[in-house]
Length: 200
Image (cartoon, rainbow, N blue to C red):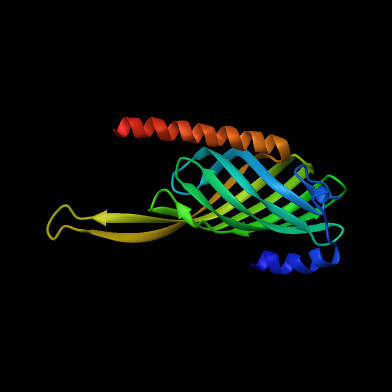
């Protein structure tokens, strides 16, 4: 809602047509369809050491001034500790017609593991071109541990702890991001079928 509230006045002042909506975003676009797909490393979180992380981050940016765009996206990320997904609010500042810097903040609304979830999702990103970006994505994750007694009265006591995680990697947008997101979705579908057959 906040994104719509900020974007609506600018859209009213500078109405745009479908021709102004871009998949390959540049500073001349009135609106950009975000189709980000990325891969990188993540350090911290629940497990010690580092791990590979893949993500898809799709949304829309609307131009609100000559050098600024705001919008929102929906992030889905997967690493060895968690699958997290949720909304993000984004701000992009254009450095020239093709390069830009970007910041975002959001939260995870769903997590595959009930004992691990991200309360805060962040992003700082440099886009040297319209289709390639280098991103840092910090997260504050909350984990629930269970301390169980193997002697009477038995039972388990839950306790929560917070852990900071940092992911860094390369992200692709535009047509490359669209293609990579499709490949990733297909791969996840195949894995889901495999695990479903194994469980049967």
